[in-house]
Length: 398
Ligand SMILES: Cc1cc2nc3c(=O)[nH]c(=O)nc-3n(C[C@H](O)[C@H](O)[C@H](O)COP(=O)(O)O)c2cc1C
Image 1 (tube, rainbow, N blue to C red):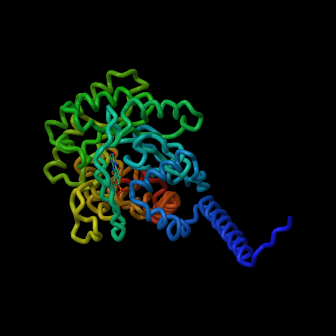
Image 2 (cartoon, rainbow, N blue to C red):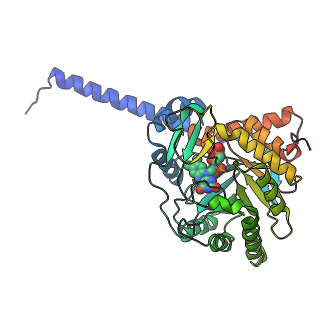
Image 3 (tube, helix red, strand yellow):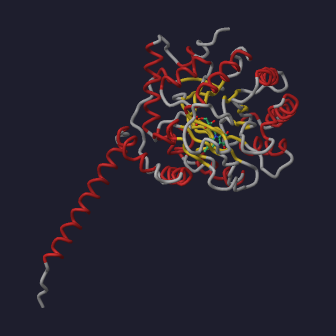
């Protein structure tokens, strides 16, 4: 039986094949652009599309893409100027992904492949908890900032630890630097016990551990930065750490808030340089509850911690204050508002030995990692420094 094709059907078939060819072409173009770390593609096509989704959904998609290794390995070779030794460890480059991006340890290997010199997992709480109600992350696009009040959504110690054991047992997981950032459960009234459990449990898989006492989204957490409480907390955790077998005694760092007063900064410097509470490093800084007057967008008044560009200067000030107050004796990881090599360089001049990013990565995607590293290398060379270590703190007047 012979069927006749009507002109309408012929047109429909043509349109269908045109759509298929275009979609295929766009798909191939996208894949090639992602493979080539094409910044224009990310900034003008891919990330604007991602921003059509709400921030938490796009974050979950990014984690899924990392988990299923959809981002290719960066082909950028870290220049020797970026190699650095901090906390007794060798880093191929000083740029890490900050806590909060891979809270549940699902994306670490891909983040390493993208080119991060180290990955910080967490914050992890002892028991699983869901965090605050959604929506809890907001974009302030004009200011290239985020406000979040996640409230430590965590799969809990056991699950996250298992994932890291699995990772460490794989060939790829052996050879990269990994920090674990510890939090406390919302309903726990024993912060000391929560952090102690974290130090004991994660010491076999982490290269360093972070005591996060500066998240603004867990009631009372930032009070742990107060002198007496901090002394008690750190001296206990150091005792716990030192009671472990030598191979499990990992560097302990404290992550602090950019909202600390001058007096609080001095007190913290005194505590962390005290013989019994001496930590191995500081992370400056967490997000801020301040809302600078130049901040724009419909979400400015949302409660939570502000990150990204508006945090850059407050974070730099905290870094240089802590560098001065501790006389450069405690290594600092600088984080807050870095989105270029110059930003990273300025944090190093302010006293940071390592750098972390989060918000700029959420806005620009993987090519930003390569850009920051390439530009940082240029700034070091332009200013006559052979290495990151040489430049640390050189912008701080003593
Ligand atoms: C959505 C989101 C979640 C975060 N979660 C955590 C966290 O669980 N623990 C923590 O110590 N910091 C957390 N942070 C803070 C970041 O680690 C970092 O200190 C801060 O965002 C400043 O860096 P940035 O300006 O490059 O984003 C979070 C930040 C964001 C944006």
